Amino acid sequence: MKFWDIKEIIKAAYDTLQGFLVTLKYYFSPAVTYQYPKEKKPIAERFRGVLAFHPEICISCEMCVRVCPSDVISMAWQRNEATKKKDLLWFQIDYAKCNVCRLCEEVCPTKIKSIHHTIEYEMVFEKREDFLVRWGPSTADTVTGGAKSQDWYPFTAAGRKEANQTKKPGKEVAA
Image: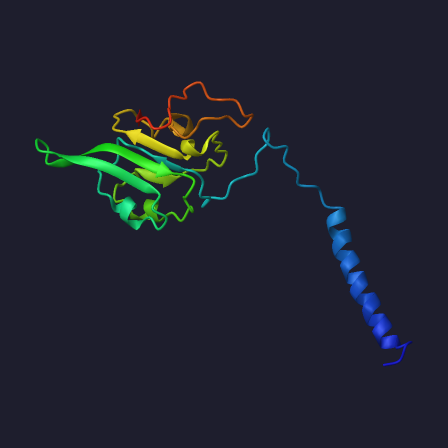
């Protein structure tokens, strides 16, 4: 290889020009900037956000508890002798350990899933104990109420607490 190898000089110049062309192509395209939190990015159809639980739908089959690889979900139930069905006592999710695998949602046997991932991604906790969210038995409609009817929705995007925050650490909450 000589110091003034013309082939090498032309190849290096061509490669540099290719890099500049890529930069030039994106330089004149419109910028994609979202003014978060006022403006939010569009969410993909299969996005896995925060887990939501609907105690009025749950049949206490414990399939989600058994399938969870991170041991995030726990629940207690008792058999109702009158109806021969299981009655939910409490249901708990530890959001600090959830790896968002979606196995709990896939294994849920109810037609409208009692546990599912939402499109919510703005979840803030003040203390480590707040990551444990416990639901009690409920007949309230948390399905049509959306994200605001869930117990894990303590803060708005602006960082202000929601008015319907009723959860106390270590206490059971009816959804």
